[in-house]
Image (tube, rainbow, N blue to C red):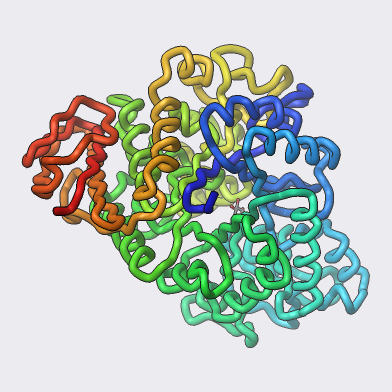
Length: 541
Ligand code: NOJ
């Protein structure tokens, strides 16, 4: 099966299911839930990092690329997971965090101890530049007692690797081969478009520095090299690159098949439409027109130029999409269905983030002390320094914190949502009202996802058709047409809490409703209910 037909499910292992009662999710827990995931119908599981790590950034600070963190289990359990998942037709996708390592990684420690070989693995300078860390503050920190500085685009404990050094690139190829030899079938590359820093490392005109290291041509060369040296030798391996602040032009270059870089990319532009003036740490309503403009532009240009998108609303870094884009108090179920249809009937590979299939929401924490995430804590302090009151700062982080996604999976209505028999590492959300148990007793969202996954496999137009926006300036509806030969699929999504009208193409009148989450009859003037999604399959005469 091509990656175009697959659906990937993301697991944040720390919060999925705790089998041994220590309050932290584990690999044995994932094994236990494989039948649930198979029932949903997904093809691949992306696991956020499971390697040894001091957990300063929840595993995105890797201290050993070639082992399993004992918190999550053993290598034997991992091998069992790969084997058992395979029996359900499910592949495992691992997270490759190759822009940086934890400062506890042996390479950094040996560099600090004075070994020149390992000092060349990092980006060291006599003087810092004015670049800013993505988690706040300077991107440079003192390198031990040497008087030098090392670069960390993320947390101070995450030291950027020097990709200009061929020995570093060789090490990373070996990491890939190690896991591919264990039967891993997918690779998710963390912030892979920032690996190629400018050779000069100079002060940035904007005082932030993104342009000095984002989407540089050399990043494409490094990715191509990884492809040729390692994963490209395995025909069926699926790769997805996480792209920080990328452009469509680069998105096309990363994913055009002939360039031999990646299968697909994540971009985040559509998830910045509730940032007031581009600032994440604000609380504001999303801009519908901005959202649809971005989705249409990416959809059309990637389609026209042969690029491929990874499609998603949620991941471990994002507050829940239901809280951002839907009046969930009014209609959580239909809202979840519309969001799902926009992604799953689109051109690209859909990713589901754990809990999305049951309509999970952000938790409500009474104080900052309940939060765990390093970025959130830094942002809270920054907001206070900027003059916000504690309650204002709390309201903002509440709406944007990454912990919103990271709360334990809600399996049942009692006992920490059935996630653990111990004390959960992060305070759970509202499992009393939303849980797998409750959803499966009366399936509405879960079953809608199942249906979408089945449709993608049954109708080639969904996996392979081209993309064109339809009535792109509509105030409430996000509509698009997929095309394959003479076949057409019109998808109309009402992402608003009031009904809406649209005129459909004449040929639709002879078409069939492939999917609708509410009652509908095909008419030239189509009226959609609040949070209503409709897909009409028809022939172009
Ligand atoms: C992106 C990851 O998704 C995020 O969780 C992490 O903090 C940064 N990359 C740094 O690795």
